[in-house]
Length: 434
Image (cartoon, rainbow, N blue to C red; front, top):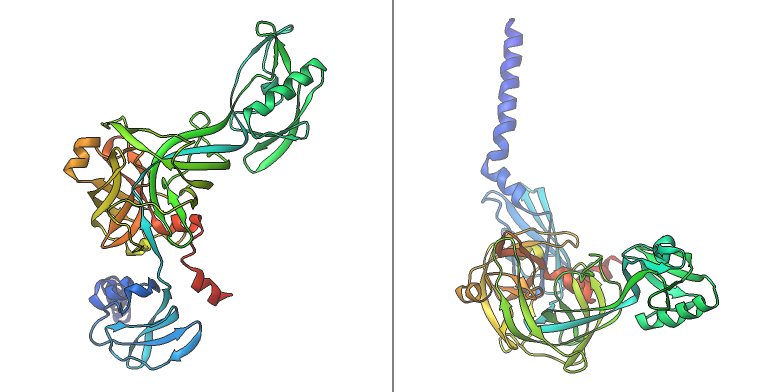
């Protein structure tokens, strides 16, 4: 090999080693740990700038609502007070040359009152939900007119012969009249986001002597859960932390309206490996109503309270934490294990994923409180929605249990529940962008 070729090989090896080593040097490691954007609330100011080493100068340009109110550069500062909501910027530079820029958005404070109360839930479906088919013994043998009309489990019957269907009792008189007149029914069906119309001919059941359509239908669902939070000014609330699905079709229930009421826990079936536990509770839909339900989403149920409610633990507004602010480590949950008494229990945040867009299962939590473990075995059905509190902030809600480990489960970040509740924490930022 010629001398020049040897030199080229050595240089190449040195460059390769440099490329492999440089990313692991402290300054470069610091560079990659500094985010491109920081979002925070007024109550968390002054903001501490992420460290980047002594040789790097740090300064900030402070703006509010995109109009400069203070353009003075703060050299080598370790923290910045941006005073008002708005967009700003932190700049890292070496010898006057910018090497890293961090956009900073300061949001107006958002405070909510955490829940923890056990609630009874009743949902009235939008139309009537088809939950099964059945055969009718007619003159021409067994058949299911509904199945023959291509109506499937999970479909929602919205109208029959142009009449809106809101309850199961709306269906029978229309079917009976059409049967007697030997007329086919024109049925408007909603399947997912699509709608279509189909014809269905009722068949007379020889045994019951009534006309039927061969469909099992449902117009309501009921259960228990836990209140997560409410916003004291608007009375908007969020609960459960997950969607309510029909027990037969396993599909989310589209609601016409709904009600939440006070609920009293009477007993608890403990969970064990492979079998989730369950709270047993009693409630009356006609009594103790505390609010309405207007939305059933992947992040819970939402609506408006008729009145403020108390938990006896945290009854004053508390700040919230965004997903990137949640830390692994100890936290608390509020929930009920006896009657209507809200209690505070220790948990551990095992992991938390910073989420830039709405997503469920943002946290993994583990129950560590001996009293709660003794009473429930961990996370049980009916505990969904129990608010999670860390460092004096509401960070999310308990949602699901791990079937093979009832002491652990998932949690959802509070910012996504607030979004679906109509509490817009990014309102100030959106106004600036418009």
